[in-house]
Image (cartoon, rainbow, N blue to C red; front, side, top):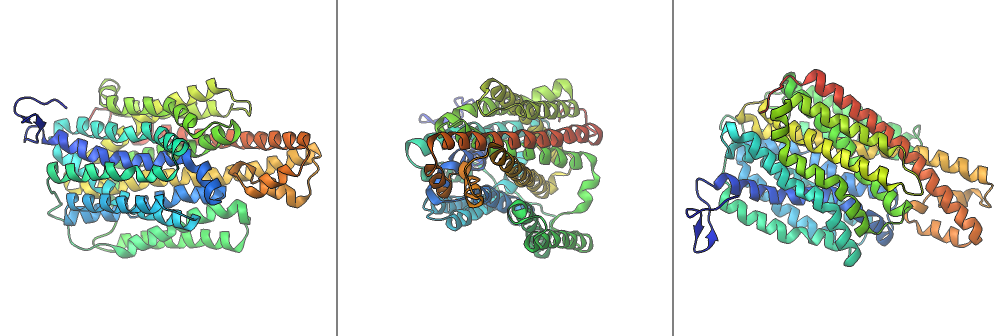
Length: 520
C-alpha cells in the first residue's frame, strides 16, 4: 500500500476515501492470517500435543476436523446472517469469539477440552470468513475486484506460509500452548482496523428468516458422516456404531435436501448450482482443499515420526510448499489474464496431481529431494487453483448474494479439507494396519497379539507402545521401529495416490464445467 501527503497525518498513516479499500484488505487479511495459521500451523504441533495430553492419532484427527467441521457447516448460515444483519457486525463477532476460544485452547488439559475449544474457534472463524469475502468484494469497483480478492488471498495466505513455521518455533522453543495464545494480539489488531476501515453492508433484499432446520440437519449429517468414516478402521466397517453413523448421515443429508427444496428462504439455494461456473468453482475448491488437508496432516507425521524431524525443522520444510502458494496467490490475476481462467485452473490442478504422484515415492530413509519438489509443485498448483475458485465463484452470482455465495464456497472448500483428513485417514489406517501385521508376522518378531496391538500406536507417541519397545532386546527394538516406519511409508504412498486421483478429477471438472476463459 502506498501513502502520499493526503494519507499521512502527523507522521501516522490515515484512512481516506481513496485508500479505504486497501485498508479493508489489510484488516480482513490479518484476520484471515489467523484462520489459515490455525488451519495448517497446528499440524506441526500435533505430535507434541498428542504426547503431552495422551491423544491418539484418531484424537489428533478430531483436533483438526472438529475445527474444520465447526468452521464449514455453519458458514452458509453465517453468510446468510451477514447479509441480513450486516457483514461488518458478523465479522467482528466472529473475531471476538475466536480470541476467547484461542485462550481456552491454550489452557487445555485434556483431549475433550482441546477439541471443545477447537469447535468454538471454528465457529468464530466461520462467522469471520463468511463475511470477509463479500466485504472485500464490495470495497472494490467491479473492474478491480479480481485484484482486490487476489490481494486479500495473498495476505491471508501469509498464514499458510507462516503457520507451520510459527507452530514449529512456538512448540519447540516455548510450548504448543503458545500456538493458540499467539492469536490474541493479532486478532486484536484486526478488530481495531475493522472498526476503523470497514463500512457496514448487507443485502437489502434479504428476508430475516434463518433456516435453522437446514442448519441442524446438514451439520448433524456431516458430523455423522465424518465420525463413521474415521471410526471405520478402529471399530470395523460392519460395526453397529459405524453403520449407524453412516446411515444417519445419509438420512440427515437427504432430509436437508428435502427441506431446502420446499422452503421459501433456504439455507442454501440449490438453484445456485445451476450456474456452471459456481458449480465448477465449488468443485475445484473442494478438490484443492482435499489434497491440502491430507498433505499437511500426513506429511507432518512423516517428517516428525518417521524422519524424526523437530517441529521447527518441519516448519522450515513446509516453506517449500507455502512460499510458492502465497506468491502464486498474489500473481494469480496476472497468470489468468495471460492464460485464461479455465486454463490456469486446469494447469494448477495438474501440478497438484503430479505433486501427489511424486509423494508416492517417499521412503523411510528420507529422499528429501522428492519431498521438496512435490511440495513446491503442490504449493504452486494450489496457489493458482484456490484463488481462481474464489474469483470465479464470487463473479458467478450477483453482488447481493455475496454473503450466501461466500458461505457456500467456504463451506465446500473446508469440507474438502475435512474429507481429505478423514477419508484419506481411513484408507491410511487400514493400509498401515494390514502392512504392519504382515511385516510383524513375516519378521517373526517376538511379540504376542497384545504387544502387536500396542506397537501400532508407536507412531502416535503412545506410552504403551514405548513401554512395549523398552521391554524388548535392542536388536528386536531396532527391527520393530524399522517395520513400523516401513508400514507407515507404504500406507502414506498409497494414500497420496488417492489424493492424486482426486486432483485428476478436479482437472476434468475444471475443464468440462467451468465456462469462463477470461480473466475476471
